[in-house]
Image (cartoon, rainbow, N blue to C red; front, side, top):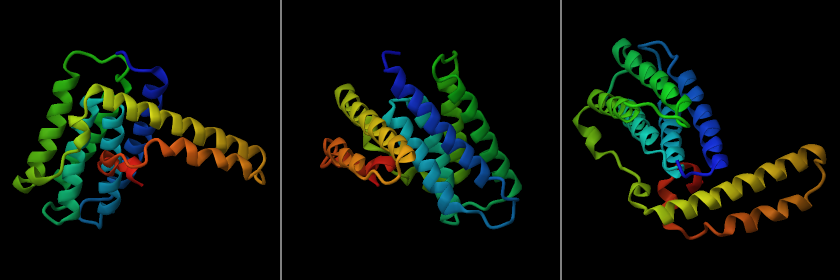
Length: 198
């Protein structure tokens, strides 16, 4: 794949977490109130994570999830049994694709496209207006730069968290966080990448 193993491992962990949390949200029974704002947030973060890791197959499935989540939040789609079944199935299928991300099988890209299109059809014609991330237009060098910097930030934050776990009073370790993040400041595209914009 030509992608650093650590970055791919990080994506798999992060995306697994988003999918599990999405799964919890969609367990709400049909006809009951749905935490649609949380659904949008998690789907958007899942898509941003896939785009950052240059996992276009997973990003396509995530785009469909985000589109359906927006339609539910905006009241263009009702949380009925049919919609619930489609969204739950899409999340389950995304989990299967994610498990194979390190060794993709033939047809995985088509399966992701099917997930995305199916959910977009479900959301209705207004779904076409849903924004797509500028990350899709970044060249390989741009993606590599952002990917390296994000991996470095994640590594720094992990080190700081471990240090604070061992010595909660040690505030000096926090001084390394600012410099680690400074390389990405001012990169306009980050506003379109949910996990990084924050």
